[in-house]
Length: 303
Image (cartoon, rainbow, N blue to C red):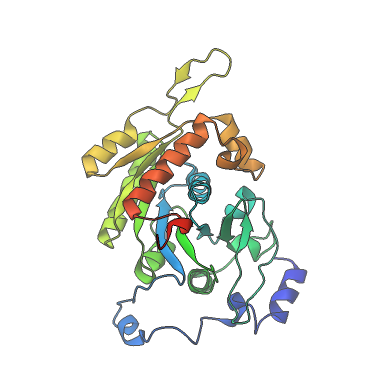
């Protein structure tokens, strides 16, 4: 982290929530429960529904799925946002082509950055792009709690949480401290990825978070020259896992160079190629999730 950033953080130490410590007002009285090891779950303020996107393994396209789902929700008329819960390796700023420090409300709440109609918050907005976050667990948990509870979302129909890989402290903190309306598990078809995905399934079940379904990413590659389709990582791994664990299969997302290229340019597929079959795959999954959650378009509220 640069000297300039340290200077900024020192200057804002009584203003920036990530510098001032945990909130001291507005939090429910839950000390007794916490002392007994029973954290009090609460809803994220001004957010109707919250879903977590998890893989328990890195490199399977979880962040790309999270962003494209949030964009699909927005294009369908729902007020949506995405919260990057990966403190050490945030991806959302790059995917949404956003940068810069968030401003603060008069109540010291972080104001989300927005692009393509989706609000977002990430540790990536609060540290230099190339700076490693070299923090021990306590600092990580403080930052995570503040990202969860000290952001002014301004009213959302649905918030997508992009979880980091694994089933450790971050996942446990989220599942114990906030009300999750469901989890989506994403995996590639091969056994080595599914082994970790199953651990994620068991984690959510252990903490009583409903699993909305599984997504099979990188399911098939179609050659742009000869148009031959090849299942590079296998074809039925995720559907088999869904049958075995009694989970709904939400759909396939193909392996395609444009999905990667769109993400690297900060213009995800749902925005860059809205009429493509690849965008349709994301849109279909988002619509299934909306149906499961019972979310309505913001314009339909009160009708």
